[in-house]
Structures are given as structure tokens and as C-alpha cells.
Amino acid sequence: MARTLLGALLNRATATPVPFASRAQSHAHGLFGNRRDAVAQMQAMGSVGTLFSIVHRTSNATSQVDWKLWRKAKSGRDEDRVEVTAHAALDLWNKPNQFMPRQEFVEATQQHVDLTGEGWWVIARDARSPIPLEMWPVRPDRIRPVPDPETFLAGYMYTSPDGQEIALRIEDVIFLRMPNPLDPYRGMGPVQSILTDLDSSRYAAEWNKNFFANSAEPGGIISVDRRLDDPEFDELRTRWGEQHKGVANAHRVAVLESGMQWVDRTISQRDMQFVELRGVSKDEIRGAFGMPKFAVGDIDDVNRATAEASKAWFAEMLTVPRLERIKGALNNDLLPLFGSTAAGLEFDYEDPVPPDAETEATQLTARANAAEALRRAGWDPDDILSAVGLPDMRHGGPAALAPVPQPAAWLPAGSTLLASADGGDGGDLENAMRWVAVSKDDDDTCDPCRDNDGQLYRNRAAAYKDYPGGSGYIHCTGAEFGNECRCTVVKRRVSKGDES
Picture 1 (cartoon, rainbow, N blue to C red):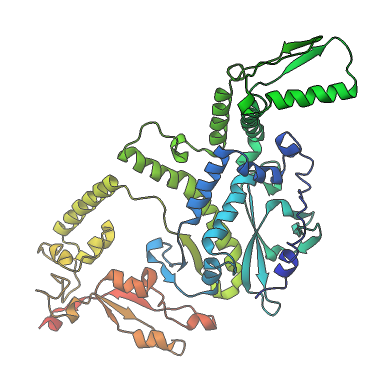
Picture 2 (picture 1 turned 90 degrees about the horizontal axis):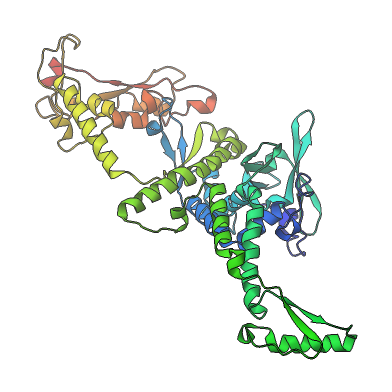
């Protein structure tokens, strides 16, 4: 367990929480709880239903997406990457700490980002190793950057629940944020722009509550023609509350004693236009987040087509940008902490945007037509599938894409083009293996590369699985000694003499 840092940060959690605001925010006060800082922004989620609904949906959707760790391909194409299933960084991301799975960790972080524009991760290590062992999400109001005039940033200060400040190094903290145009050290979230609207929505709800709690009347004045002494005033207030306070006593007739007069000061709910006020507040809150009505379940008319379109829009416009922010933090800040073992690796998420069946069908038709055109032009079946982006179809696919017999003037002398990928009319099973691994055999050649020299592959997809982009054997151990793999995989031509 990593206790060197987290013990100092979290073991003080038994103390009574003391609200803390950053220097950049502590001066800001307003109507919402008399504060407009990060604490007020986070408290707003539990006070306004529309805000809760938005933040809950966005943070929950972001946390449900699956992640994988990949080794980058030399070609730079995602489809040529090789998945890494065992690595310390992957273990940490799947289980950031012993109390939080990744889903809860991401959801808590995204709540902070959506509410305050900032998300903070604190890294915990063992004193004997620099490798990260745990990550913890930290409240934005408890941490602040320490500017430096020469290096821009000297580190961070964390304020524990009991008010003690703890210095953190730059490598101990990962910062996710929506950039603040006025402060390069802090973030800015949507809630900061709508605190006044959140005030209005909350106060409208409280006024409605008090409308019923206080005799269902906003108020009035009892006018007395003389000054009441203290016992008389207390008796009047007590008797009035007993007779008129509460919903059950609403609109009871008031009986006033001689010398007293009731002056009505009533403002009706219609006069206050609370229905319209709360509707405007909802629109302002949704507007700040770029959230349409359907995304929070406010749907007047819906069918399957609009529901599927809404789901795709939510994923593409709201979930993906949030995932990209987390992806940047993982690849730019977290992976480098693992040193050379993370070189060439990158985290990536599973695309949450659902496939568009109509678009996919159109694309498939276009690709099939392109494949047919290339087949008639005499191109190699495997090259055709790769060129148009179709998968390898082992059961009848490549045979169906066999080239139309034409003069093979473009082929090297003494070679011929195979008619099918399964060795049908073009030779036996070995002749159907169209790609071959080629390694340089010298003193710098590692054993895995030497052993795989001459290995045959059925098609390019299989060959590129071991040699991403056509070069560099995935099992090469030369990188451990600072050598770059020189092995390649090339298209294999079958000579006429080998066909017999």
C-alpha cells in the first residue's frame, strides 16, 4: 500500500471539514450560500434538480465507457496497433485505489469537472519506488497551484479537512480542466456562469414551499392604533401562529381585536410567475452545458428514430469530448510516470457513439462496388480487401474476389498470380501463404526475430498482426539493448516451378 503521501492527505478525514477556497476564488461571494467559489458550485448539484440531472447523466455516461492500452503502430494507423493486456499502468487505471473501481473514480472526477471546470488526481507511491501505485480524486476547493515566475509552476498546496496545508510535487498531481481565459492556473466550468440562475431556481422552489408552510399566504400587516407592550406582542404572535400557520389552516378567517386592522400585502403565485421563472432557469442551465431537452428526458414527442439519433448525439457531442480530456491526462501525464516501460504505449477508449446502420450499409455497398472494380482490373484479392477497408473473408470471400484472368505483364518474370487464397487452382496450402517474414541474420539479430525468419502468413492482415505496418516484429527483444528491429514482412511471389 502507498502510505507516504495518501496517509498525510486522507488520514485527517475524521476531522470536521473546513471549507477551503483557492486564492483565485476565495474573494468571490454572491447569493448562492453567500459564496460563488468551488464549494458553492459543487453544493449547487444537490440544490437544483436540473443541474443534478445534467451532471449525473454526463458523469455517469463518461464512466461507463471501456478503456484499453495499445502499443502504437509505426504506420500511425489505429487499426495496426497491438493491444497490451498486461501492464502496471493498465492495472492502476482499472483499479485506481483499493476503495474505488475505475467507474466510480471517473464519475467522481467528471462531476468535479462539470461543476467547477477542474478535476484533480493525486498520485500515491511507495517510498521505495517512483512507480504510481494509487490515484485519488481530490476536491477542487482543497488544492491550488503554486505559481513560479521562472518555471511557471512550482508545485501544489493541498488543504486537509482540518485546515493543514501539505505541499505536493508536480509529479504527484494530474490536473484536468476546462481552461479559464482569465487564469492559466485554474479551470472554469459552466456552473460559474449560471450561479445567479441557480439562485433564482432555488429561491423559487423555497418560496413555493414557504407559501404552503406559512398559512398559504405570502404575508400581510396587522396595524394597531397603539403601541403594544412585550407580553401583548408575544401573545398576539403566538395566537396568530396557532390559528393560521400551516397548510391545514390556510385561508382561515382571521378575527382581530378592537383597535387592530389587517393590511393585505399579498402577491400571488400568478403575479410572481414562478412557473415561467423556473422554466427560464432550466433553459439557462441546459444552455450553459450545451444540453438539449431530450438529453435530460424532457421529450414531448419521440419515436425510435429520434431516440436513436438522440443517443448518438449525446455520445458524440457530450461524452466523447469528456473522454478526450481524460485520454489526454492518461497519455500525457500518467503514462510517462512509468518510465521506459510505457514508451510507445497509449490509452484509448471504446467509441461510445452507436453505429449508424443506414450509413454503414451505404459504406459497405460502396466498398463492395470498389472491390468489384479492382477485381475486374486484375488486382490481388488481399490487396483489394485492404485497400477498400473490407475484412478478410476466409470462407469464400477471397475466392469470390479472385482476379479475372488477364495478361500478367506487370508480374515478375517466372511468377504467376494465385487464383485463390485457399490453394484451390493456384497450388497447395503452402502456396496459399502469400506473405513471408524476412529478418537480417547477424550478430545484432535477436533470437525471436531469427526464429521467425521465413514464417509464412496467409494474408496481409495476419502478417501485419506480427509486423505492424509491415516492419518491426512485435516479439523483438532488441529494444531492450537500444536496437531497432530491422525485420520486415513482404509479399510472397510463387514461381511456376513451385506450383508443380
